[in-house]
Amino acid sequence: MSSDSRTRVEDVMSTPLETISPVATVTEAASVMREHEISALVVTSSPPSIVTSTDVLDTVAAGRDPAETAVRDVMTSSVEVVPPDLRLEEVAAMMTSLGIKHLPVVDGDDYVGMVSSTDVTAELA
Image 1 (cartoon, helix red, strand yellow):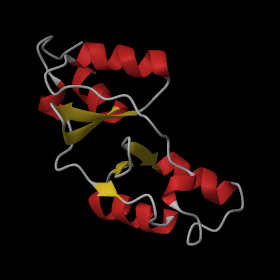
Image 2 (cartoon, helix red, strand yellow):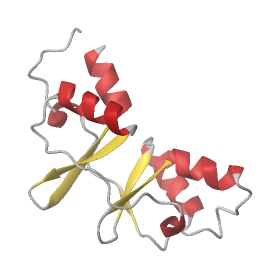
Image 3 (cartoon, helix red, strand yellow):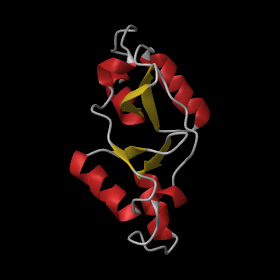
């Protein structure tokens, strides 16, 4: 590992956090992801949820029309979150054990960014 063991989520997370409404279409979600060159969005629902590029691909692969499918129909609800000061090694272990690739970053009650497995791998490799 070339990364300093003190590297934290806040050092590699994507900001600002991009969000989307649960009533937006999957096509709209894909457009936002493409525009910002990211692969996940926090969905402004209660509790906050997440929609990923994999959800977009799954929608198309299932033969559903992404222009007619709402984000709420494909999102993952009640996602895990991490604080900005968490060590990357801990994030990597969490992603591996949960089988996930994205974690919203929360500082208190505020969503402040997103950390992906790509961010972690690039830093720790």
